[in-house]
Image (cartoon, rainbow, N blue to C red):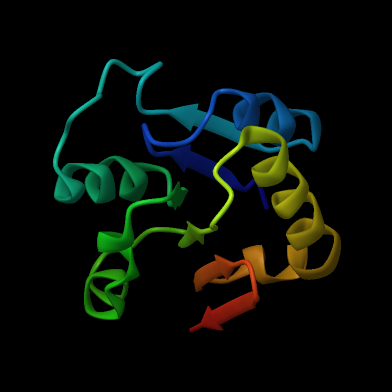
Length: 119
């Protein structure tokens, strides 16, 4: 099964390269010319390929919306350090431990203090 990610405009392009090197297909809203679109449109784009939405936008924490849309899942970063190297390290640690969670739809919230995974 091929896993695809749709990165929100609030995430660095370095995350695209990081994920592609790990074998994932990745789109970035800025590279698609979709900057500034509404969250509902982000969900619709992700639904086209059952892509995982990856974002820092707390609006995507809504469990009701998560259940409503047919996306691969959502990964929400709620980190106090916003620098790119910290984000990449955090994502690497997540994948090293929880990559199997990407095989089913989950709402995953990655915080400094831990990871919350909802079905």
